[in-house]
Length: 151
Image 1: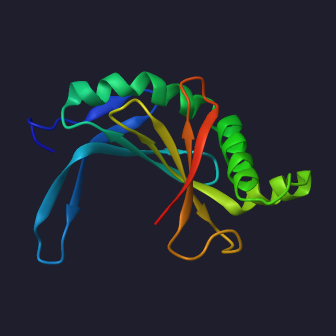
Image 2: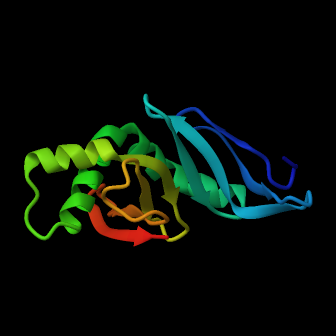
Image 3: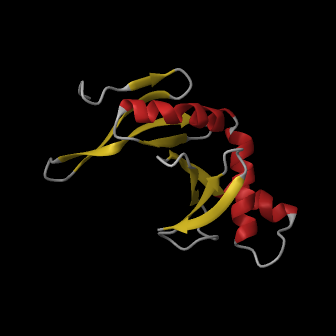
C-alpha cells in the first residue's frame, strides 16, 4: 500500500485496501476500488467498494456499514427475492428456507452510483448452472430492488 492509496481502517468494516491483482508473470494491476472482508459468523464476506480515491470510498462507507450491521435480515430478504424471482409459482416456505441455506453470500459491492449489490454463490449447484451466480440489488431503504444473474 502506498501513500497514494492509503488503507482505510474502519471500526465497523475493518481494514480496507486498494484492490490489486498479481498475474503469473509478476505484474501487479491496481484496481479502482478498495477491498476488505467481514466475518458473518459462517464465513468471510468480501467487500468491494468502488472508488479510485480514498474520499470516494469513505463516502460509500456509511451505507455499507448499515447493510453489514443488518446483514442477517438483508441476506434472508435477498435470498428469498432470488428464489421467488426465478420460480414459476410462489415458492413454498420450505423452498425459501432451502434457498437461504443453499445461497451463500460471497460479496457485498458498493458502487459509485450508490448501489449496493449482494453477490451469492449457489453452494449446491441446484439453482444456477456452473459459472452463473445470482445478485440482489438493494434500494436505498435496504429492500431488494432487482435480482440479476451474473457470469
